[in-house]
Image 1 (spheres, rainbow, N blue to C red):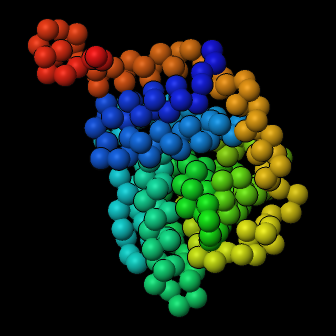
Image 2 (image 1 turned 135 degrees about the vertical axis):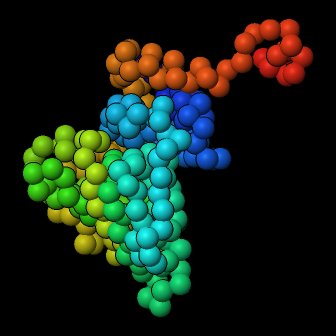
Length: 241
């Protein structure tokens, strides 16, 4: 089946809300899922693999001034906190740069949307992590579409695995002028601004392809935020009109 980007956002948001995530995390997670899905990544499939029905137990904790501990949790929504933490550290650094390590996180790709949003006007991030079989990932994010991503293999699928926790190095340069211009970005990158733009245009034209079974599973989880259609619920403000 195919879904619009708004449908993807709304179902992800309701699923996370039904899982009782902290305030705002439902919208942050929905933003990340929609952003990835809208740029040719299997964002909704990764969301499903993260088991959002259990999102209330996802965690991210400070483990020092430059270290965060995810304890195996996915970065679907807490990726926003990672990016904000690193950017805040850079603000107090003399050179305006900071490096943070996230320990034991799943789904490093979920950092891309939050980093891109943070760099809309200024600054740039570099994200480094290792996947299975020693595969190395190197991403530069300097805006909504100014993204370069390289991987030490021709197989892009390693980007999307959600099963194995990994350590991620997040580096933020509050100026980032050179990276925003592409200097120091990965050469012969697997993904670059041109390919991302093409993916975005294709998604806007075609929608997002999602397995019906996955969609139904998330829709079932999301129903927990709905209330029964009764006279009492309508008196209390449920429904339209």
